[in-house]
Length: 170
Image 1 (cartoon, rainbow, N blue to C red):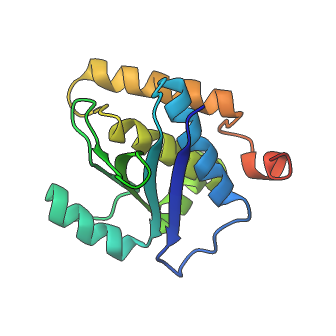
Image 2: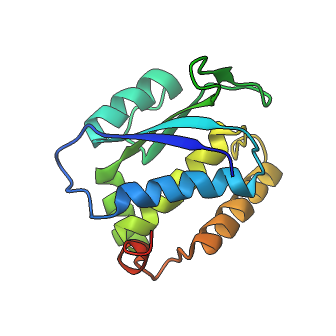
């Protein structure tokens, strides 16, 4: 498999990041690119932020005046990506995840924060590759099927804590 560099930053202090979550995010990014047969070196940035920060970004970029769980900022369009000229890797874009919202959603859906962050990462990676569930119900269904297939390949389900089971295997 081609190299995938995942740069992860924590820009919030409200939620303690569970052990193994960074590895989970990396595994999710790799899994999406493998599932989609991307076939090139790639770079992606993932930032953990709080509700206040994601609210501001959501308002600025989507004109929606409330926090959300995740935002994706693709750098490519129609399969064409900017390239890091030092490494030759495709620059896919940025993912920002509100850990506050992810924590609440995990509680509502009855699964772990790890499962929620895994889902949000896979979801956003598909956005970075050009998928858009807001275009049509068909696109939404295709995207949901891909998300579930990728999560299943990773062994992430709604009622399991993925990180605890897999953190020592890599």
